Image (cartoon, rainbow, N blue to C red; front, side, top):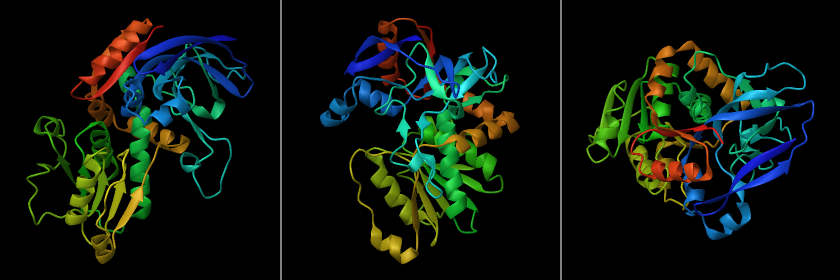
Length: 341
């Protein structure tokens, strides 16, 4: 099968490559339909990764968040036209202790391995899950990011102590919003408090019990457990505030990605017996749980639909470039392209 792959070759420059694909009985061919851009894609697009990283990973097809329709299933278990979510993490081995998303040997689409910006995507059978028919398609495009939120909260549930009175989330962006939405579903009896830098973004968190600007947090405010969803340069300040405002023996799940090392007040971490738990990416089990949560809770789906901030049909390479450029100035929510190339 001949396939057209749309690869980023350098900052803001894409090219089309025709490749021959072999499809085995354990693989499924999917036609991408709706693709969602994340910050990692933008860092590649704008050339903001270190030059040695860009030289190592480019050229490469971007985007790891997306849904598509089944074109071919050699085993006939998925009917043609079935909408499916494509799981970007692709393990090549099984470990009885380490989950697939933490195995160094696993491949990950749009990170040294072609993403979903292709005419067709050939996936291993276990990398595909059906999307319920009543799901909004642009919202479904970022189920992958919802699964990352599920992974974070799953690790919190496995690590935290019995105190779930107050869950604090630092970060008013997309990841913070998704995590907050999931907290209301998975911790229904807990008070949800969100901390952010922009009041206009915090206003979207109307379902939270309380919201605070990070420079207006009451000195005596305490949270039971915390999630850091800021990333970048904001990680250090967020972690410092979490350490200051979390109860002793609390757990802080770190989810934001920072390109540079950040300083952590280990004296306070030790003195209060805090647990810092790192979380990265997700696996099939997280996707399954994410879809089940969304299936069971129309309210959660409705809240996540509010996160769709920019949509556009793309048909040409220039359309793709224009879409990425528009996303750079998108103030709120996820940018979702309808893939029609």
